[in-house]
Length: 324
Image (cartoon, rainbow, N blue to C red):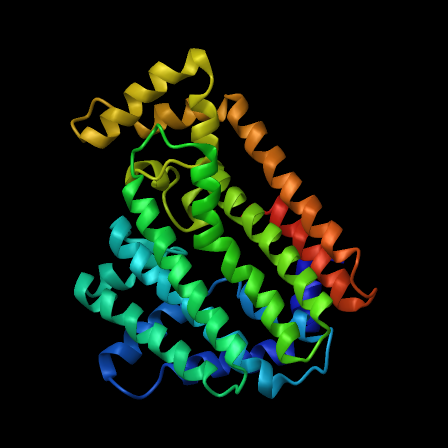
């Protein structure tokens, strides 16, 4: 089974979710609808809605109900990207102009706020207050994660634990609740909901580590942004932290990072990337991603053996080996 087979199996339902995504941001204000649509049309893997639908397959599957989880989760993710692009001063995302580059920072920030509000409006269609609280808590944690990332820009003294807590908040939590809430809305047993949360959390952690590795190894055509963007912005990721733990690399790599931060030409992103690429930090980051995927697969092994479980297994393998 390949990842595209999974999307093919869900195509009809995912087409419906895509239509509802566009419909959800339409109508209130011409500019905000236009900027939001620009972001959604830039594409994306739509993994969070896929996780919602697959989670729903473990209970009483009802697409009309699941849309009110799948759509807001994708909207929350999209809103966070708009805000990220302002903070990072990013000109492109997925190979297309960001909202902040096509319009400006103020419009981008209001676009993110607008999309967040639309997400909350969608989820109120469900009467389960636990789902409302879970989404709200996730948004709070994501905001904390964003602030932690800003606080730690160019902080080469941060620990691996600091990094892991940050990506838990920024990435893993939203993927975890995508799996969990899809099952919960379908009235799956509590044990299933918990196992799907555990699966999603570990897949989310691996997803972000792989994303950080792609920033060092990918091409602009493939990843939709210039390689080394994280380092230019001051985001010290796991492979960098591991490379800094190598005695022979630490001082030369620190010099490059300090020079990049100073912006006076004394630091070179390409030189820094080359140091990291040839360091044991890459292998160590890959090994940690592997460990998270194994934990995700362990959680799946306790779930009923059905097509959805097989799809989730394949997605876990895709996340761990993805090149885009």
